[in-house]
Amino acid sequence: MSAARVATPHPVLTDGALAEIYAHARREHPNECCGIVFGPKTEAVAARAVACVNIQNELHAEDPVKHTRDARTAYNLGAGDLFKLQKSLRGDEPAKIVYHSHVDVGRADGAYFSDTDQAAAQMEGEPTYPVEYVVVDIRRDGVRGAAQFAWDAAARGYVEIGRYPAPSETGR
Image 1 (cartoon, rainbow, N blue to C red):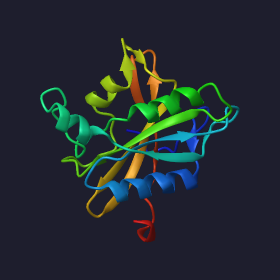
Image 2 (cartoon, rainbow, N blue to C red; image 1 turned 120 degrees about the vertical axis):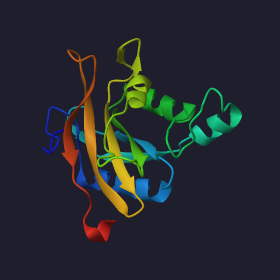
Image 3 (cartoon, one colour; image 1 turned 30 degrees about the horizontal axis):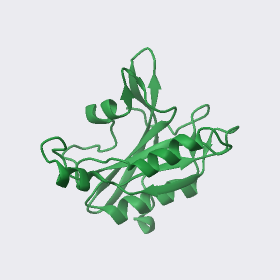
């Protein structure tokens, strides 16, 4: 794991976008939050965080055999949010990052890209979307930080490329 901050050429979250993501994770606790961060096409900046609705509870209620997890341990973006993500890729402010939280995980560091995250972010062994991913570690006592993950063609998967610090005590 890297303790380094995310640096260009990867999209870097602005302080404002990171604060919005952390606030979203706190609002949704004990469920996982999810959202998309957009940024200027010509810059390695992810500045506008948009909270999405985690539809995992709906999917689980409709078919608990197919969707064995609920929103406490999984996330799923709805069709409308996926449409906005896809449409943005043709515009001047494309989606740069998809984020979600890991809630009260039973390990020291909850900001990791799980096997489930890897599978959901790929289709036939390739990235589903040209975005990076941020995972927030949130516990009952607040946000502990986040990590960013980018596609590594040689590894055929997403790898950690940097960290974002926990908010200050007043921001928890």
